[in-house]
Length: 282
Ligand code: FAD
Image (tube, rainbow, N blue to C red; front, side, top):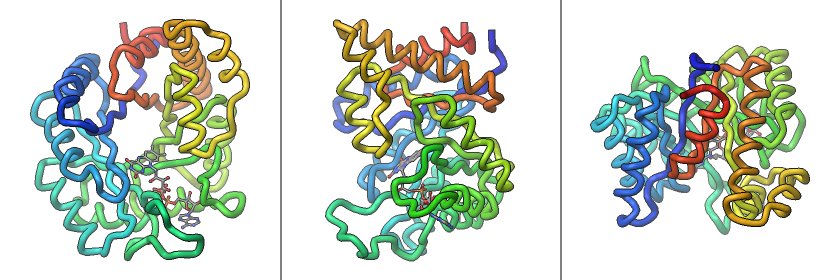
């Protein structure tokens, strides 16, 4: 058993109003097993501002679990970003994932899309100024950020986020435990001291894997691709994805990871099964 291992989940706001009841049921089922926090994503360029706020407020008011709100600053003035943070703070939210955010679709190479806050480190500093005791997480990229132009740029960005006041980082998903382990070694050697929580995604269908590779720019993991292709039914593919996530979680925990963060895809059964099989919950 790994009964004392901290764990957490990510959900996203419902994409259609009719999915809200289902998400609330999922949140209740995730909350029952006692995660440290449940994070709620923030749609690109603020597209989910109201539904993200609604979702974190639901978690705060209806569970005993701390909601952690993802917020982005891309394309905003400083005043707009501050108004956003104050809106969530006013709703009782005290935990945040401070992000820069992606360029809007259609941005031309070289076009300035950033706004007044240029990096996630600026967003960390802004949140700190609004809420000195907030719990602030940031993103980390074991396989490099797609915008990185040179080696170590991601580690420098992570250091800048730490200096600005980040409490811990959650990593982008990765497919091999060595990606995380080597990244932690490089970060520690460069002076990063905050906990680096591995983000683990059970990839339960071949279609999902293809989509993830497209969105993240990660290299296609051949073994997982082959295993999902060889699995016949949906159930067999799900078993492959769960086993892969279980193996990753065990390997990174054995290597000293401070906990695990599971990308739940608004569905509780798969991530709970992963936690059971790793021995984190009964
Ligand atoms: P930053 O850390 O500011 O920068 C990204 C990269 O730019 C760095 O890794 C580095 O390569 C370079 N860089 C930045 N600052 C410096 C510096 N000082 N020195 C050197 N290089 C630098 N997006 C959403 O829109 N909504 C979400 O809810 C969301 N959730 C996420 C959750 C997690 C766990 C992760 C890993 C990502 C998430 N993203 C989300 C994606 C994120 O918005 C994108 O990665 C975006 O392109 C950059 O945001 P960032 O916070 O990583 O930016």
